[in-house]
Figure: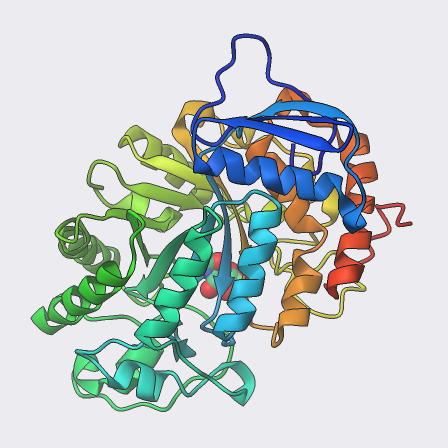
Length: 419
Ligand code: NGO
């Protein structure tokens, strides 16, 4: 469990690489774990038990996660968030035992990572953001700092360079990628209008360079190439693009991750597909197509874990294309029964997303994250049979003290009896 409650591994169940055993007696703690990750999580639990600096109660806990990928995505492209903000988000993920930070580094509205061989991406593409707000970008040293800070907390950074759509900022910085067509930075929130040229060699020289630099900066095994909503790329071009981009990831020794749409193309072994669109049956079909190809899935259903959705009609920020997402919606679902014929074994994990079309500051992001991130973290960590909404509701209420001490903006959802 994420927020401590008396739960235990059954007899004979192994701790595994991220599991731990924690015993507290008279304020003294004893930790057993197979590795650093398990030890780290035991410490996080101990910290949560000592909320407010008190002495932890006597407990015996043996626990380990259900899913290997427990993630959250932050969109730093629509609005930019600096290194300190990202590190604070990392702290939040660590407190709730998430282990993946997916950074959405490029989109139509901005490009956020300096690439030495293509400097105008960040110099030019870094300037814009939604609504004409200030842009920004990470130098390679900034990015390394984030990676290091995350690694110290058992969190792997998964960088996303969104392609072939969602590429207006790059096309604008380098008109030669758009057959010489010049354009102005885009500050709106429409999607699906831009595309890399699937038949131009330059496209792949560009992506080869970018992915090589991103891979060199990223110790984790995954590179996310987006692939979503390529509405102005024909299916024929999309397939041609996917066939040429996959080797560029493989040659870096990385595993490919992409949004569900990539499952319409033949995928290399070891690929990971991120299910997201709950507004049509197509998402289910693509998830099944992914599994049929042997890919594993990350479950990010829009109506459950898109934390940029409004909680209810009174939420001042956020979108609502997937409906309203209240805390219980984020909590009360089972990743392994969501899509017919996509069971436990096909699922690598669960990931919350925070898209930032309407979110401009860290406070905005925190208000969308909390308390829902705790719900998603528990979906990802705790076996279904040990999860219970009423029990969670009571435990998450107690987190308010932590958030208030740390000055974390959170949403006082009416579904929780806050203290
Ligand atoms: C969609 C879209 C994003 C939006 C987001 C807003 C995916 C994978 N593509 O999710 O561009 O920002 O919804 O909720």
